[in-house]
Length: 98
Image (spheres, rainbow, N blue to C red):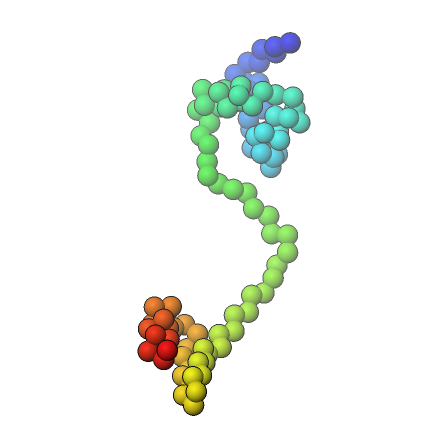
């Protein structure tokens, strides 16, 4: 059975979805709404779709980056390079040592 809703009802529904934290698909399934109708009315009423993604910090972690030197040993020769050495430069060094 098709339910007719006023623009004000749709406006309320769209605002509730945005405040719910649910995706449009999840919100529509939960509230037994047609996602196609939701998108069509949202566009008609001028609600813009934003690329904003609501994020919630669930666990804070500390990132520790230790950069150790790159050491290459060929026979009696040993070459040490900083960990920030570019891949191209490292490839050239390896070609010369080969």
